Picture 1 (tube, one colour):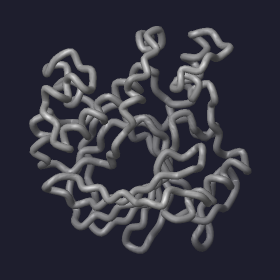
Picture 2 (cartoon, one colour; picture 1 turned 135 degrees about the vertical axis):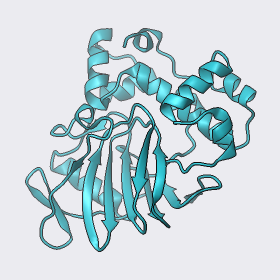
Picture 3 (spheres, helix red, strand yellow; picture 1 turned 120 degrees about the vertical axis):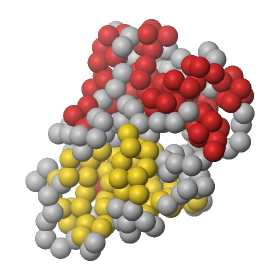
Picture 4 (cartoon, helix red, strand yellow; picture 1 turned 90 degrees about the vertical axis):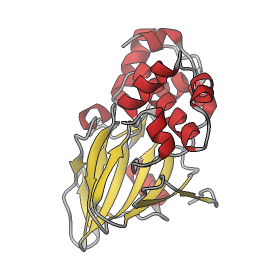
Length: 263
């Protein structure tokens, strides 16, 4: 297993009660591996996200695995006290053929059945629960078993590499493998990027310009929908948000006008 050595401690505002820690990964299918602990029971804003992920929950002495799809809007969720979670967030375009991201979209999560000991059932195989350190070993086994796949057309789209497909075929690939359209993907990435800028101290005006919004009203509408708060509220940091991390601003600069216009 090869991973980035540095761990990024993430804080989530003045009213934080969920503590996050995340790390990168050199596995080509993995975007981030993160874990968190809830210090008390409370509500939080689950913000929009593009990625498919596997979450391992440990609560009241029990463990279970949940498959999660993309989230296309912010949702207020309840969080139990003293819960622990480990999550493998996959790169956009990584999916399980049996559980396509579209079928999991917007909290249509699937909790997998438990097996004997420290294991669970997935596609007829009993697998040990992964942890924060051995996530890549777990992912490698999923790939070897044919449970996890990645669509190269999606990566070609994001990296602007030419593909021998029509625009319509590329759109179908993107939707099937991610559960969302390319236009929605870009809107969510931009909103998350703008939120991180605000949380790091950027002014609302600078975020409008830096994240490519038309004006402050456009920024406000976007953040209300995808993040669940206005720019001013995000700056105040009075609500716990779900997992956020700094994204590469060059990703937002990727513009494929034909795909972006197609809903």
